[in-house]
Each structure stands twice: as C-alpha cells, then as structure tokens.
Length: 84
Image 1: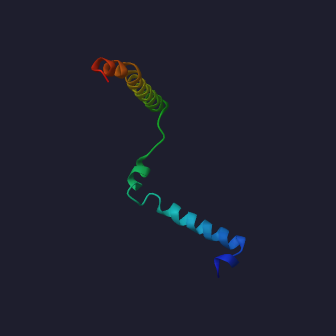
Image 2: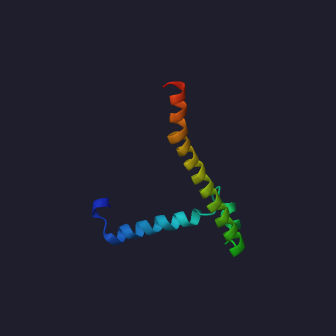
Image 3: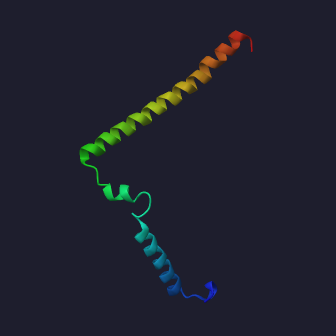
C-alpha cells in the first residue's frame, strides 16, 4: 500500500509499532547497565548536586565578568601605554 493511500489508523498503528520497538531496545545498548543501576537521588544527594551546580554557574559567571572587565578597562590602558 502506498504512503499516500494509508488511512489515519494504518499510520497510527505503524507509529505505535515503531515506538514499541524502540521501547524494547531501551536497556540493551551501551547505556543499558547505567539505566538498570540508576535510581532516584535522595533529597540530600539532590541538594548537594544543586548546590555544587549553582556554585559552578556562579564561578563561571564571575570568571566571564572578570574577563570582560579586563578587556574593557585594562586592555585599552595597556595599549595606550604601549602607544597603540
């Protein structure tokens, strides 16, 4: 049967079969062991992870701002001192 002549239900069943095939393969690939061992983190683990992630974001922001300040304020001063 051509793709153009398939009914809505035929297309829906084909899509359902594709989804079911993908679902059956989950856990059998290279990440299968990780997925089987994975568990929901405890509240304490989640809080630690969130704090560390937030701290990392803040540090990266401070580093970026420092680089921006150096570029805007210090670099022109150095270039003027060198005569450029």
